[in-house]
Amino acid sequence: MSPKKKVPESVRFTYGRQSWSYPVLTGTEGEKAVDITELRRDTGLVTLDPGFVNSGACLSDITFIDGEKGVLRHRGYAIEDLAEHCVFLEVAYLLIMGKLPDRKEWQSFSDLMNRHSMIHEDMRDFFLNYPEQAHPMAVLSAMVVSLSSFYPEIEQEDLKEPIDITVTRLLSKLRTIAAFSYKKSIGEPFVYPSRRLTYCENFLNMMFSSPVNDYWPDPVVVRALNLFLILHADHEQNCSTSVVRFVGSAGSSLYASIAAGICALWGPLHGGANQAVTEMLERILREDGGKVDRVIDRAKKKDPRARLMGFGHRIYKTYDPRARIAKETCMKLLARLGMQNDPVLQLAVELEEKALAEPYFQERALYPNVDFYTGIAYRAMGIPANMFTVLFALGRLPGWIAHWLENRRDPVQKIGRPRQVYNGPALRPFVPMDQR
Ligand code: ACO
Image (cartoon, rainbow, N blue to C red; front, side, top):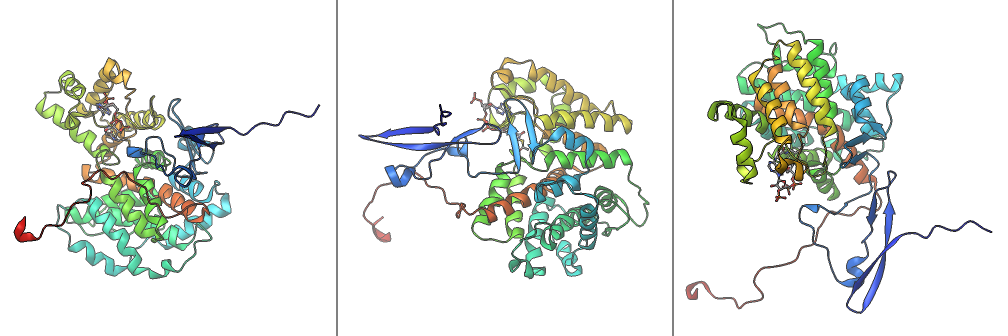
């Protein structure tokens, strides 16, 4: 007897007297999705899904998340393994190229990164015209889009080789732009990148050394920074990554798409949460005398302004695996810096403990996310709060690039263009101005 053929799964859709069948796709890890590509053509209906809570936008090979089990993998590798064994740039290479680099590939990638780390001298002048209080995220996005006017040839590159000049230029220069925007905000001279330093050492050196301050990055701080950037490197179709893919789908350049992603990341419900967490903790110490019960009670009343920042996640309905690593790293870092009694850290630990014991948070599966502890660690490194989201952007950049490239090469993708259900006034007669 011949083996039974597996019947492909499908979903039957009935509307009026007709019904149609749509195929069910299964991902590598068993995730299922119904493919409704033909739905509107067949039925005349569109789907309505505010916030895309139920909608997949693409097939992707880059990152797998199981939000129920707290699993995060990049190109098949567990985040825990990558965090333990890699530096940030190895993970960047993995995301963009789909494989971890061997020694030779690593060497040529590092050489390219060094070669492209400086920004055009004329771009320095741009920094001088921002007001001192300008948020570094505004500067970052504007500078990234400006790169396209200094390097116009990127428009013509077909990006067949992902680790090409355009990609390394952006990876390397974003770090320089980030550090320059900080130096500008404190009125100190810019520090140039050095080929003797690694990616993270270079960033810290550009941030903290000055003509009157010889700075040598502490290896524990360098390791922690590598780790935080790895934890942020990609998170599949999150808000900013979807923006990058969307802008890229219109045929816009890599730089224009990433600049848009930076703006999306800036929001306090997304990457801006790391800044919002430390501001919230400092406010609790200042205004509530460190009394977390009051703060938890306010959060439970569901006033959006009283949400516990750094808590909750659209995908994770258990402890965010990145938050676990971030917490451990934050604790080790602060101990190493002699700051284990930091009142902000102690408050964060107490707040987490008490919130997790509350039925409100348990019933809604609200756990600390990656942003809950990272800001506390950055603060201990001496990084000011308005730079926290910039660090998130540095970390997320390889993910954005990988998704932009994947989208560009996907033959199925079209320009991103959702539908809507119009709910405004029906046709009405036009009234001239003097009769209104
Ligand atoms: N504090 C208190 N209540 C919360 C919180 C929170 N931080 N987050 C969600 N809730 C409640 C909501 O009021 C809602 O309650 P209900 O079901 O009784 O109406 C329920 O939990 C579900 O919340 P939604 O807003 O529907 O969840 P969504 O998936 O849309 O939002 C988000 C996820 C934006 C992360 C949200 O949890 C939040 O605002 N968290 C605080 C901001 C934050 O930390 N953002 C960083 C996210 S991670 C990242 O981008 C890297």
